[in-house]
Structure formats: C-alpha cells, structure tokens
Length: 343
Image 1 (tube, rainbow, N blue to C red):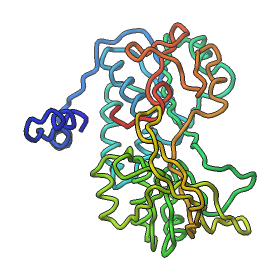
Image 2 (tube, rainbow, N blue to C red; image 1 turned 90 degrees about the vertical axis):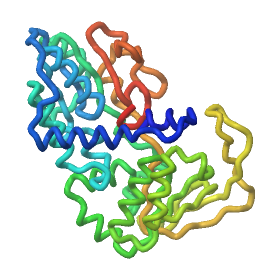
Image 3 (tube, one colour; image 1 turned 180 degrees about the horizontal axis):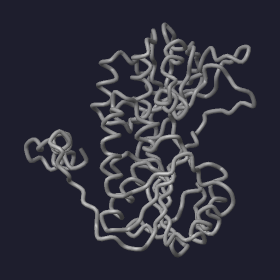
Image 4 (cartoon, rainbow, N blue to C red; image 1 turned 180 degrees about the vertical axis):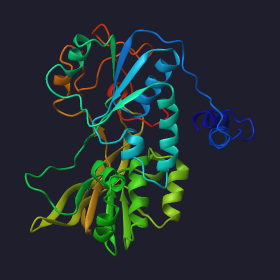
C-alpha cells in the first residue's frame, strides 16, 4: 500500500495493486504447500527476541534465515502481538496469522508464551544467562487516556482493552454490552476505525467517531474512513472531548467542545482551537478511547542500562537497531512510537 501511494503521488496512471498480488501469492503458496522461507546454515549464536508482534516476528525470521538460534518470548498466552490482540478479525483472520507463524516456526524459531520481560534488568540478565544478543520489540501496550479514575467506570474502555478482549474470548460479553446501545469512539486513526466498525458489528444502535480535527486531517487511510462511514459510523468532526459524565460509576455521556482549525502546529497540520461557549454533551453508554499508546511506566526498569527518551521510547539506530548497550538491539513501536504494522 505504501508503494502504491507513492505511485499515485507521481501521477503515473494507476499503480499496480502490489498488496493484493502479494496476498494472493502468499495464500497460493500455502495451497500448493510451496516453501518460500528457508533456514540458513546453523550458527552457534543464540538470540532472544522480546515480543512476537510485527517487529519481533520479522527479526526472528530474518535471523533464522541466517542460521541463528532464535527464541521469541511473548508476555501473552499466544504469539502475534498486535496482529493477534490489536487487529479485529474482519481485518486479519486468525487462520492467516497462524499460517504465517507456522512458516516462522518451520525455520526453527522457538516461542515461549506467558513469558513477560519484567523485573529489574530483565534484558541484561538474558545476556548474562547465555544469549549472545537480545532484540527488544515489546510494543506499546499502555493506552493514552483522556482522564483517569481511581475506580473502574463501567462503559469506559481503552482501544487496547476492547480489541484485545475481542480476540481473547470476550466477543459475547461485548455483544451483550454493546447491543442496542450508543457507542462513542474517540480518535481519528486506523485503530479508532477498527473500534468503530467492530462496535457496529456488535449490534450497537448508534456509533459516533469523535475527532477534534477535520476529515482530511484524520490519520486513518481514506478508504478506512469511507468504509467506516458506509458501515454506519457517524463522524463527529471538529469536536474535542474534555471530560466524561459519570453517574454511579457508569458513563452516561461525553463532554465536548466544538473546535475550529487555527494555525499549523509542529506537525504541520492546522491545530484545533476550542470555540468558546460551544460546550455540549453527547449521551453515550460506552466510550472507547483510541487516542494513542505509550510504553509502560515501569518499562525502563526492564533494561535500565539502555538509553530511553522522555517518552520512555528506546533510543536505537534506525538502520542497525543498536542501542546504547552492546548486544541489545531494539525495533518496532518501542523505538518509533505508534506506527502501522507494515512500518
């Protein structure tokens, strides 16, 4: 898709649909039992990969193709990271993911699930225990919040809780919670679109996607936005969530204020400016926050010798993936911040 966008920008007719061709060839190879990946000549070095999301799986496959002994350590019960626990089934079928994992296992890669990298100096200890290198790819699983409460508020969810719960056996519970109800999703990226479309499919009466900027400024791809709209999602643009209405520990509404676009901010987009006196309340039964992810507060303690920035993202060379500690490398969202699967 990223290649196709570049072709569109160049003005050279319509691009070849590289993504769909590649998807077809991958599935065709499975049907014909055609082996694409080959294990390299065995080497003695042992590598630990922390996290089995897109970055971790890519690293593990490339290392195994070069003959290294690779063990992938995953905190959750099954491998896949965001592919399994952050992407709804209508976007990525479980069987497709399992096929891809099967190919990686065929290279000799081992998986250790329910094995989080926690405790002081977890990464450094792996080097001391005999691994020749460690690749950090734990992803970003802490959700950015609009507002935090000391006690649980019924009906207030993060995108992480919602999407992971959907893939972790909670489908029926969400159907019961969402059926016939008013659902609000806060955010304008691909994750927000996934949450909104999933809410529609769970039988919600009305689904509102609340975003503080305009349609053209939304980070989600245009076809994702159009698809969401066609499925029945209502877009509330130029509206800034500022608080919730909570009654007896249950959410009953979102306090919003209308915005207008002002001067460009640091990102180059025109910044939303609140319109004074335009506050109003959107009644809602469930609110899902899809406004970004961040590294857990305690994560720097897992690798205290590794340099991190003010956002707790690991400082690593984007070409070599080297960190400040010899033998420890890092990649994926933990060095770039939230990004797409393909990035």
